[in-house]
Image (cartoon, rainbow, N blue to C red; front, side):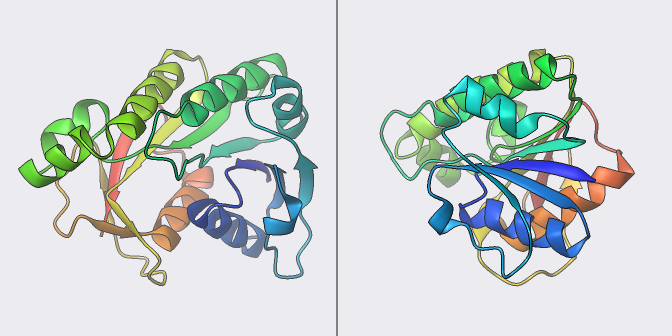
Length: 206
């Protein structure tokens, strides 16, 4: 399967790239700095550009069977990269007749807000307020689209090894409030073939 990945140089995106390649998929990625792309000797179609530049995004999604959006930002200040970047991805997919879209959001966004503990709500409402607003707008764009979308809402991200054991569902509670990035990638790569969560926003947690 031909897969285009946005946010491929981030920790979660890089894990998705590795597992997609290991699964025999053909991977395309749009990156600002190709030097940050770790492919471990395997072939990847790299485009240099910015997700906020529509023409660059359109080139990266042309002819793809699925698109995975793992955009993020290290800034605690106001950010639009997730929402505006995703808007460009959706428009580009519509223009190129793409259909399958995965978007990595966060537990606590949208209707999953009620599943957060008091401490996590406080954390989201203060330190991560800008990121949450960006995710909310991002999810709204996705849900309003005509694409075959799946929104993935991870609990607290860790760099732990793949476990292959995790809970996935709409508005489920997080027992540990953690999820390995490798397990997120595992779920998404498997869902490419399963198609069990189209038009659903699901929480994933260990």
